[in-house]
Every structure is written in C-alpha cells, then in structure tokens.
Amino acid sequence: MENDSLIYAVEGSVALVTLDRPEKRNALDDALVSGLKEALRDADSRDEVRAILLTGAGADFCSGADLSALKKISEGGVAENLEDARSLMELYSLIRRVRVPVVAAVRGRALAGGCGLATACDIVLAAASARFGYPEVKIGFVPAMVMAILRRNVSEKRAFELITRGAEISAAEAERAGLVNQVFEDAEFESKVEAYVAGFERVSRSAVVLTKRLLYQMDGMTFDAALQTGADVNTVARMTEDCRAGVARFLSKTK
Image (cartoon, rainbow, N blue to C red; front, side):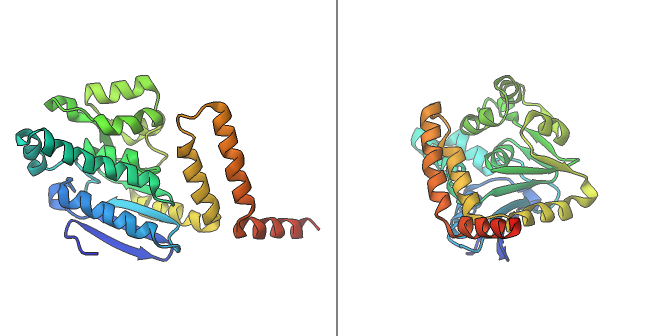
C-alpha cells in the first residue's frame, strides 16, 4: 500500500503502523484515516500477524484533527459532516473487528481524536511523559463516538470528567483511570513496547482471536446470554489445532 501519511510494514508476527505526519503532530485528515483503515485490513488478512502496533512518528502520538479537517467541519453541511463522522466511526469499529490485538504505543501527546484513536485500541502502552486528553469541549465540539468506548474503559464519573473539562492528564493518571494498560519510562519505552508485543508470539493465536471476539461480543449481553456464548466459544476452542496440541504437551509433562 502507498500512503504519504503513514508507514506500514509487517515484521515477523507484528504489523507496524506509524502515523507519519510529525510536522503536523500526526494530526488526522482524510488521507491518514483512509490509510489506517487500509493498513488494518491488510494486517487482518495475514495469518502470520499476531499483533498490530500503532505508533506516531516524531514527538507526539497524534494531536487530533488537523486544521484542514477542522475547517471542513466548520464549513460543511449535514451530509458532508455525517460522511466524515462515519469514516471515523468505521475506523473505530474496524479496530475492534480486526482479529488480533491492536496495541497503541503513545509517546508525547494523544489529544482529541488522537486520544480517541488510542482509546479505541485494544491495549494502550504509554511513555511516562505522555499526555492524554479530550479538549474538544473547549471549541464547542463533542468527543461523541469515542465516548462509546471511553465509558467502557473507565468509570462513568471519570469519563464524564475527562470529556467535560477538557483537561490533559499524565500517563500515570491515565493508567490509574484505566485508560492506559502500562506505563514505561521514556528511556526504555521502545524496548519495553517491543518486548510486550513480542509476548503475543508465546500464546496461541487462535485462542487470542477467539478471546478478543468473545470479549467484545459479550458487551451488552445479559448474564445468561454471555454464559451461553462463552460455552459456544469454549466448544470451538477445544476443537482448534492449538488447543489440542497444547493439551497434549501439558499431559505429556504430567506423566
């Protein structure tokens, strides 16, 4: 794939997706959003890929929508704005539909749409100096679509505070809130992220794929429906080659 807004490469079992607009703090525009979706779809089609790592070139992860996108929002009509919003909605939805874990590695600032992009990922790893925030309310905008994901990641009251005050928070605060999985010191961030993502090579790919799908599928289900769906997936998992081989290895060690 060719896209001047991002760098995409598959290295071994990891698909690397890098937002590549450092001079714009990796701000989102139509081309970058389109490129992200194309990269995610390609990575999802590759059976050798066990994880997708999303990073930003330069000092920041992503600063949100760029000036041209904001101008488009302010000058566009209902139909144009709806089409633009649906394009971003499709990206968030795609991240959840991709079979393998999508990991955001955040250095610098992840603000507005950039914070939304990180929040939409399955796992968020942050450098200690990273900053997160939803400042949309400061310009009369609403972080509307990502709200559906944010309130599933953090408590309702914490989500309310984050999206109505528009303040930036540190990586440590984001971790305490449940927005970030792990925080690593700046000096060792890259090596720690690499080691973390490599960990998916040591677990069953088919089990991770089934687990991701089931986790999000259960969202909104009743308790009984979730149990029944879990039983169905449990049965499927037992029949996979990975499970049969794993059980055989375990039994051979107990003899």
